[in-house]
Length: 68
View 1 (cartoon, rainbow, N blue to C red):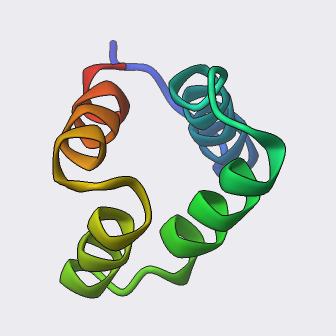
View 2: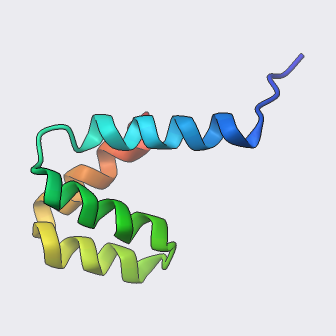
């Protein structure tokens, strides 16, 4: 049988993945990135991340998030 997840479990896992991905960044930068990700704007969010982190770091960050 497959696993069943409650919505709370998914949200907790998402935050845990985020914390792992940004653990080496400053607290202010972490907050800004979290707000961008939570906005759910799709491509606009990616553009904002590139503007904030730079292209290479943004790609690396997004790869880290998709790995987990």
